[in-house]
Image (cartoon, rainbow, N blue to C red):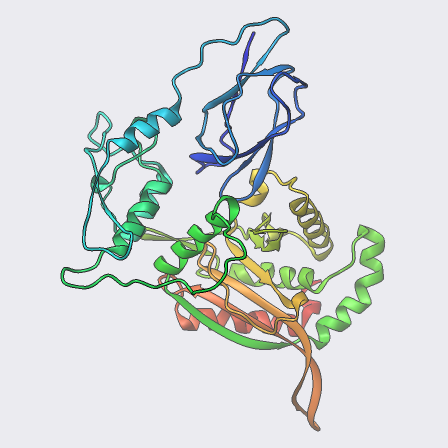
Length: 416
C-alpha cells in the first residue's frame, strides 16, 4: 500500500511550512523513523521522519516552497508498486485564488499597491473562514476580516494574509501626499541575500511586535557579589551531580522563575480584548545559531530547582544548536530571557517576543565603582533591561518586578 508523505502540523498554530530539503533522493530506499526531509516553521528548522519503509517516489516539494499543512509532497511505495494519482494540490488552489485578486494602483509609497479583496468565502453560519491565529492578529491590528482575501484552502484567511494586509495598510498615504522614495547608496554590492526562511520569519515577528506592542523600557544594575560567591561554592558540587558547570545564566533563570509568579502581568499575554495571566512560568531562552536566533523553552520553570535548571539549560541549548528540538520545546513561552553578556555587551533593549508581554535583556558582569561603607569600591555589576508591553504592564508594575529580581539576585541563597 502506498503511503502519503504529507507536511505535518508540528504546532497548534501552524498553517504552512517552508520546505528546506530532502534528506533522501527519489527512488531511494527509506526506513520508517529515519529523517526524510527538513522544513522551516516560525520556530526553527525541523527534521521530519519517514512515516513508513519503502521507496521514495512522486517527490513534488522543492526548496523554499511554502506548503500548506497536510499537503501530499511524496509517496513511499512497496517494490513494484505504482504511484497513485495525486490529489489536486492545495498550492495550485492557492495560486488560483491569488490570480483572482484584482490589484489596483493607489497613492502609496514607492512600489506599493492596494489589494482589492475578492468576496470572502464563509462558513454555513456566515462566519468568515480564518485560522485562530489570523483572527487574533487581525483583532490586535484593527483589521476587519470581512475585507481580507484568504489564500488558504477554500479561501481561508491565514497569518500571512493578515501580515500582507497590515503591510499594505502601512504603505498607504493620504491623498495629496507625495510618495517617499529612499534611494539606495551608490556603492558596489558585495552580496544580495534573499529574505527567506527563519530570517524572514524573525523579521515579520519583530516588525509585528514593534508595530503592535507599545514598548516601555526600564533598566537597573544588580550587585552580583553574592551570586558570584554562591556560584563558586556550588560549582564543584553541581558539576559532580549533573556533569554540567553552573553558569550565571542558570542562577538568573532560577531567580526569574521564582519571582515571576508574584508579578502576574509580567508573565502574561495580550490577546485582543483580554489579558491572560499565566500560572505556569514557561521561560524562553534566546539562543544564537549560525544564521538566526531560536528560543527553546523551559516549561514550568517555577517547579525546578537549580540543579534541574542547569541540566535543562545545557540540554536545550545543545539540542537547539544541533537542530534536534521538538516543536513543543520551541513553543509556549510566557517570558523570554536574552543574554548578550558573553559578547561583552553591557546593556541593550530587546524586542518583545509575541504573544508575551515582556522580555529581559541581560548584560555582562563587569567590575564597576559603587558606593560602599568606606567610599567607592569595585563590585561585579550586571545590567538588566526589561522591555514590557505598555498595554499590559504599567511602569510601576515593571519596576516592581525588576526591583524584586534585583533583591533576589543580591541575596541568592534564598533560591536554594
